[in-house]
Image (cartoon, rainbow, N blue to C red; front, side, top):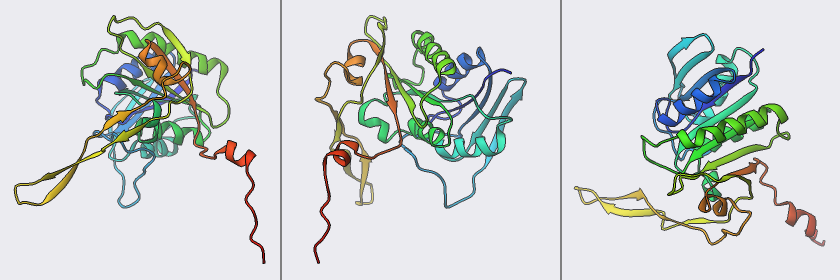
Length: 255
């Protein structure tokens, strides 16, 4: 039986990146696309709890079904798994995102929120992102690497509840040098909001900010991307700080 892929993203079902990812996956198996009806970037691991969800059928044909959900990327995974998947998926794919999800961006990413949700549900999952926010970005140079990583995971699998966060550079010379298995760089966003005044004199706030990362040593995702390599970061939803857990004791209160 052919592999079955669930594909989602956070840019919306009609984004160029998800079309590129779907084209690659269709060469390898059957595909069910369940993606947000519109842009759902920055949704992280949020899901819809205050209203009903609706799903529209975009198209259905042999080996490919496409649906648009008016919820978050995590909603897409949950609803697709329960109601729209004809059998257990071999692999869940998210992306290809327009823009980076490296370093601390994984925490905010709807693309990676869907990946982590799939991983928690017990499915191997990969998130793909291209470092180009242009809606008409050129995904061509990235696709051989995307296919290679998908085939690798199909053949070798992933550890339980470990997913992959894959970011793909856009080198100025157009040449991607290869792939690197990396750790996540430590970084943060500064001055995340601008305070503005509307025509009625009332303040409002608009997301802005500057990405700051001094942790770009060799072995980090930022180093890999800055040097023309695809970064692959093994990622988990387990937030436990094991180094603290293993090296510290919490004293019990005395009575």
